[in-house]
Length: 545
Image 1 (cartoon, rainbow, N blue to C red):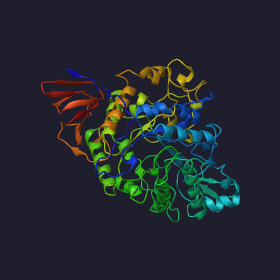
Image 2: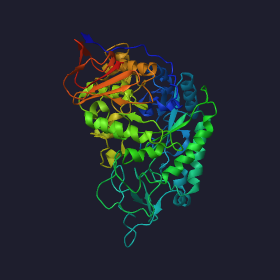
Image 3: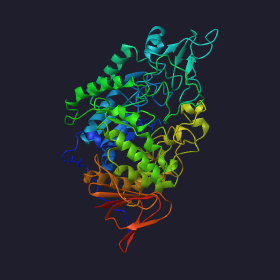
Image 4: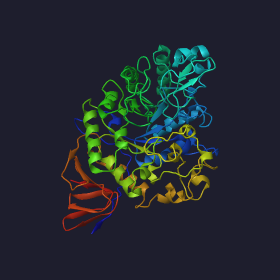
């Protein structure tokens, strides 16, 4: 017989921690990333906003996630999609007003969802009041005299992640550092004023009820003493494992320890509509190894760090097992959970990046959700959206495009392709994204991938995600905890969690194995016959033990 994937009714009940398991809602949370510009537009200007996001929160609650991470919505010239912040305490008019942020936080808490917001501490916008004041700028940003007879050469050989030199010369003749776009000058964290300002910014948003912060470029605030040359031609990558004098310096950990103490001081205070709970920090840290990454989540530092080693792993059983083992071992050494992520706003959507199309993407998702720790879901991946690779040059807005630098993660077409607004319905303007158009054009066939088209269809990717997240809540073993590997055929992974076995066939063809148990959920239909199970190519199955 053929065992179709099961679709348990999604439930909003939160998991009860197992006896002896470390406390902390974040240790096994599923966190949904909202790229605000592309999620939902309430006013018809073609750009997503906070009100639109608030109106769609019930969808996320029904999907079964635990928290929402919002990309920057602060006042910004939008030179890098809002990651160039001019005022950290003000909502940009593109996205609404401060009261819209407050109402979103309250609405999320009323639905049992926590809210994480971005904080961008490595750099500001060049329109920030500090940078606009020449005296303050040279105290609070990284300025250096140039080399050469007349200072006409950059201070060192560093290059921007977005391409080209990491230095721009001013009309005064000195140079300022920008590891990203020239409109994003790097702050000088040797200045105590910078520390004090960001502590005040964190308090501002904590007082409004946010449950945590995703720390952008958490590994970048401190540079090696003397700003030494790199001495080779390899340019810094957006997501990579390079050892660089401006990333992953030991000094960043003192900053994170200070922030952890601040977060802990709020964790005993009830939030708006939520019981007392930990307020968390999540590091976007690109470290050269799992062991270096684990330093960011020591008990007195941040709570989570993105696991980019998993995101960039090849779809091959040995490579996946190596990354999983190394990640779990590194975080276990400091008592922290591991995070797992397959897509975000900086990389090619995993349906396209992994190859193999939608079947492989669904299998990778089910694998991710079975691993111990916390998982991140990027908006639209629950719809099975592919990367948009054919955007016209004239509509692109990624600064890497204009500086001639492809982004990391195998991106073909730069980062705009993963930021195209998502489809909600199949027969409304911009597929229900908003009453007007969309800031990036959506493919003509996205109506069939919309929320409305997939809702209630048991074979759809949306209902598959709902089923997986529903089971993850119902089964205590699918969360933070132990994993043990089981014997499996070549290119098949098999591991046990409490009460659940997960099998993953990374081959493009079926594989037969002894029937492991009762199938709970499969990314593709599984054939069960004569005490054996036939796993389809590029598939993942959860079995009840």
